[in-house]
Each structure stands twice: as structure tokens, then as C-alpha cells.
Amino acid sequence: MRIHIKNGRVIDPKQGIDTVQDIFIAKGKIVSIGIAPNEFQASRIIDAQSLVVCPGLVDLSVRLREPGLEYKATLESEMAAAVAGGVTSFACPPDTDPPLDEPGLVEMLKHRARNLNQAHVYPVGALTQGLKGERLTEMAELFDAGCVVFGQPDGLLSNLRILMQAMHYASTFDFSVWLRPQEISLTHHGVAHDGEVATRLGLSTIPVCSETIAISNIILLMKETGVKVHLCRISSTEGLSMIRDAKQQGLPVTCDVTINHLHLSDMDIGFFDSNCHLMPPLRSFSDRDALRHGLLDGTIDAICSDHAPVDEDAKLLPFGQAEIGATGVELLLSLTLKWGLEMRLPLLKTLSKITCDSAQILGINGGNLSVGKAADICIFDPDDYWKVTSNSILSQGKNTPFLGMELPGKTKYTLVNGHIVYEKQN
Image 1 (cartoon, rainbow, N blue to C red):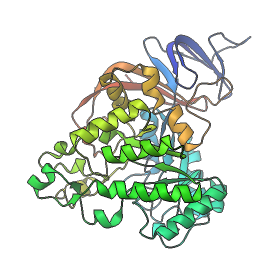
Image 2 (cartoon, helix red, strand yellow):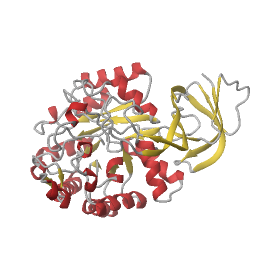
Image 3 (cartoon, rainbow, N blue to C red):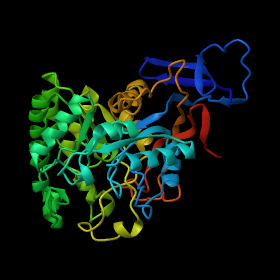
């Protein structure tokens, strides 16, 4: 299909483009920006007047719940939710059932995703077999099957020797290791930040040092092995300071923050709102503000949704027993725009945190509008405010702390490989 996107405000953070131009697409690729190629005849014209045309969003954490957890969500429902949010590429964590620790499972997931012809799915391979932290997976085989990076999503391995061996293995093949910095022995049964709110509500706590001790161990092992590490879901001022120091030392470390931790604090738990039962826990106002400014100064490299759909019954339990997680892939664009507006940033810099910067961390050739590249594009109205409700969310999981809020930025069209995979109906 040949598509002509006209009159749109084209924003490409990677190339520093922010201007009203036309984009021309043929055979799934961007063939020209500005001037139509010779003899170009569009089979579809999209009038993007007053709309922003940007690279398709890249999300670093979207749980599809397949295989094994289809009662929470399905591949079909979450892929539809992703493109409705303008997300065209995303990483899928390995904590499925069974975990993504064998090539056959990865190939099956990739095959199912390709058949849906929607967003690009990039599986994160399990670092250890069964994610048990005892024996390493065959990372090279998982890479050949389609894994792009390798991680341990449930916190730092209790056996640091195993972690060091995994880092050595990954470094040998130049693989990136993704770790959530959390010392498991310090989070045992904890559900909330160690502060006044948890004390008032009588909730078991998770101290900030559970994050900082883990970061310290990871940094020391990085120096020993030379591996590239991405730290997932930073939550504290102290942790951020340690990462800033590591970057100044020249260590190959990157990190991200979730949309939830960017806007919320432990005060938002209110009277036991289980939608705020997240991991890492929502921390103090000062931590939240430090994270917002850490994005601004570049210490934090990207924003992710940490999308985790949960069935309704699991969120109706008391706070401490409710299942961890929040749906978010459809909110990534809006909550990133909200951060940018509150920080008074230009759209060019705001969008970089969910396009080219995320793509670089994931190691994919996406997140930009370069001529000759795949036409993965998000077209949205920055001035269209929408209300977050159970009906407005396509994800099978309706669990989000932002229910009832009005947010800026509504996706109008999403294109993947030059095909319109989502079009907002009036």
C-alpha cells in the first residue's frame, strides 16, 4: 500500500526534526519526507492536520501473559492494546508460564505475534533456567531463536556467583543483561515503601536499601565482567545517584523508570488502593521528583509502561494479598506527554524517551523516521484529552491507578511496516 501522510507535524527525535511536512510510504518503508517521489500515486491519504506524526513508540516492558497465563490476558488483546497506544515495538519479559528459557517457547511466541501482523515483539530471554537462579540458560541458542536481551525480572539472584557467571557468558557474546535491582532477602513479604504511609496502614515494607544494595553488587560485577547492563524500574533517589556515578565512571549501564513511578508516590495508596500495589513499590514524593529530574538530565534513559494486566479478582483482594502490577501500554504516550508538559519540555525531547532512546537500549533499528526504514509510525492529537475508564482501555487488564483521570494525547493512527494497524473511530 502507498500512503501519503500530509499536513502533519513531523517529529523525529533521533534526527532532530520538528516541522510540518508530508511523509510518503511505499512497500512498507518511508520513501520520502517533504517532497513526493516521482510518479508517486497514493492509495490512501491521511490528513494529519493539527496532529503529530512521530516514530512508533518503543516500550521496554509489556507482559503479554502468553504462554500459560491467558486468564489474565491474551496475545490478541494486548497486541491490540499496544497499537491503540501507538506502540509499534516492545520487549516482552520472560516471566511467562513456563518462562522463556527454551528456544521452542521463544519461536512459538514470535510466530504467534507475527501472525497477528501488529506490533513487533522482542522477547527477553530468561537468564537462568525457570528463572530459579540456579543454572544458566543457553543464551546463544535463545538469541538465535529471537531473544534480543536477557534478564531476571523478579529481582537480583540470591547466588551472586551464578549472576557473575551469567554476566561473563553474556559479555562473551556481547549480549545485554537486564536486571531489576532488588535484593530479594530484603523484600521478603514486603508490599509498600518503608515510610509513614506504610506505618499508618500497617503494611509490611520494602526499604530503599533493597534497591541500592542490589545496584552496588551489579556495578561491582559489571566492573569484573565488562558486561552491558540495563537496570529496570529505578525507584529511589539513592539508586539514581549510584547510577549517575556509574555512568560518570564510563560503565556501560542504562536504566528506565515506569510511568507509574514518574507520576505517583506512596501517598497515592490512599486507603489500600490495590491498583497501586506495584513492584518496586511507589516511594516518597522526593523520590518521585528525583526520578522526574533524572529523566531530564539524562541519568534515566527511557520511560516504560511495565504493562502487567491482572484479572479483576486478583485486584479485589486486600492490598497485601492483591496481585502486583498495573496495565499501562495504552497510557505510555499520554503519561509521557503529561510529564513533558509539567516539566515544560519540547515535544522533541519528551518523545525521545519512548522512541529512539528506548530503541537504542533494546538494540533495534527503530524509533525513528529515517528514509528507507520500516514505516512504523504513531499519529496522535496532543490536544485531545481522554478519560481513562475500563471501557476506554482495550487491554484485558483494567488495573491502573489512573482510572478516572483525563490525560493528554490520543492516538489516531498506528502504522507498522507501512500498514495501518490501528485507526481511531470517531
